[in-house]
Image 1 (tube, one colour):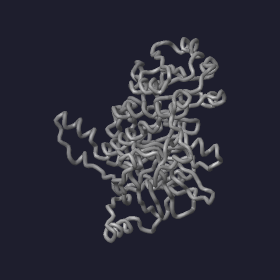
Image 2 (tube, one colour; image 1 turned 45 degrees about the vertical axis):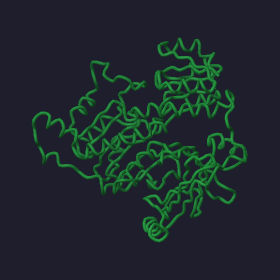
Image 3 (cartoon, one colour; image 1 turned 180 degrees about the vertical axis):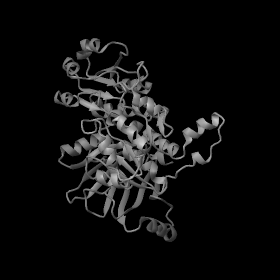
Image 4 (cartoon, rainbow, N blue to C red; image 1 turned 90 degrees about the horizontal axis):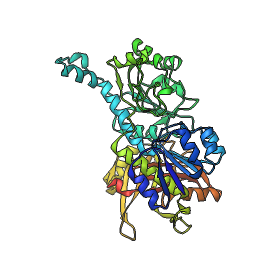
Length: 450
């Protein structure tokens, strides 16, 4: 399979695809129209945000089987038209979700403690303590809109704080032990902090406007590490001036070009951007929340894994799990209880379990001597993590090659719940057995716990 790479990425992407049997070609300089003249000879595209993949481009790509975007979203691609032509679309939100969540948390803590303002003042020779008195995050309510990979990673970062975390998403039953899923109006009623983690879609375009902001019952802090075009900047500026928004951390701006590259190429910047640039309670960064040294590697690795998982068996002999090797061990046992904290303490005191906040990890070795783990975890009675099952427990099985296994299970008529998710400690998928018991399938990376 021939793949055309339209942006420069981490070298592991080319190296591993070549090793898996794919043929790679790089073209970082040709125009979109020039690429359209040759694209029919390629079956795959790897791109970041160089240009839009529209109907004209897709019509020219007569043999295209997939488009892989080394990033979190697919907004630069005509998704519906691509799917209508049978083109498989691949993104990598798992690759930079940790980076984005750390950036969002850093912005909150900096705003709450006036770090940016205080830093500038001290460097100018001013020692203003009282005017830089901070605010603590503990005791606050944090609202997250968009609870996919990014939102979940951000909620996980908040576990070390004494905060209430609420999430809102267009999908049902996505809340977990880190965030309670609620309607938008409940977030608008309770939130002290609002963080956006949504893709840019017709539903989210210009979502944060005056009407949206005025729906909040309390003044709040606003963080946007998602997409700039989801926000009406002039309305946010007005809310900052009125005090409805206490402060804002903006990694993305509505004025960005689709490529997310240089914003300062025009002589006349919008007045609202000038105003943001001179507000002490506003932090601005150049779309770098997901732009870390580690995420560059992770994004490329996720793209490689997904391409190989979906198409690789046609290029080389991949270990496709048969019925005998699908489950490789017990990954965990999770159950609901009235008071998880007290129960964990009881098992530690009376049975000697080496417990932590989440329960107990049991270590063992497989027959080849590799370190493997099994997790025992009590969950709160109101957890939605076991949904749609109404049972008070959930099993977790360790498996091989999860993405292919899920495809096989779908073909066998097994009910698959949601989409596969990937974290630093492995890939996760969920199915239901005939009696409605939810089963978590885990392709583990045990070394993440060591």
